[in-house]
Image (cartoon, rainbow, N blue to C red; front, side, top):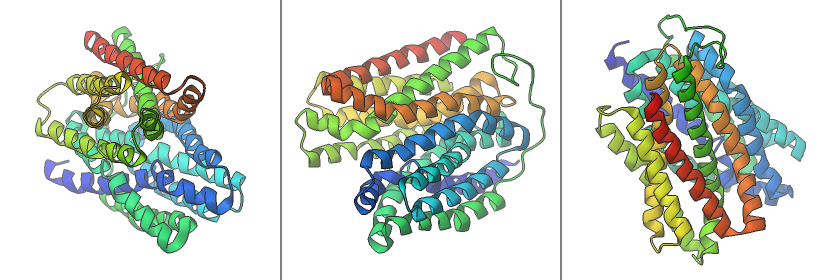
Length: 387
């Protein structure tokens, strides 16, 4: 496909990512409290819906990647729009908690077939070894998901309530996401996917590549754990150090712009450096930011800017490093397999953080985050030896 045809594809996928992230992963950030207050369902069980969805996404991700490797991402992303619409409709109409949780099973299936990893695999299948710049640009679009959808959700709640908000997002998937996928995402070029029997089923990896695969899986697992714990417990952790609620919220708001700013810097590099530099820089920035928080340094804003910048380019590295390490032919199925541990970690990490906070306190939670982030730096550095 000619380079001039890329912008319509990437822009369409960018809108799809904004709506998909905003109506799934970021949905409960605004809707959880109104849901609990209106229905009387325990807030913990309301939030558990997202963990259930992430577990489902992790379970299906390897098959999703393999399918995209064979057939391209268009049918998968179209399916994601349909099941997200169905799942959100069930959430909006749920008369009881079991039905609500059942709706998250479908939303989770939509997440597993529609978030970054399937989108990265789609771009890798379309553009092969030239997909790096497309992946980087797509993460820039995705960085605006909360910026767009949190205010939209708040507005919709005021107008139509939380149930109407879920139904409105369902309608947006049918009216916007699905047509964009069907009209803008082309069929991929035909190429064979390398096959054999091995540790990663259906994909040929030699000994060095297997070590690289396991190291990358470790990076994604620990990265998902740290990100999920910080996302859910940051305000509580800051308040435990004496930061007022309003200040904690203001500090947390620094993360989003830092993510987008770091992605713009990465885009400006135009792929001149190996993606492992991006991954290593991401893990170092996250580790420094978390370590500053754990040490109690009076530079909370700077710590969260560094953390946000690292997390921003980490989203790029998780898509571009496997492409560089394993090549375009095996990219889609391997991205699907690498997504599983990260999604499962994101599902379980908030509960882990809650247990540590409750039984060991904020200092122990900060220490745990710092240790996990530092171990991830070591894993990223180890990838250089086996690339």
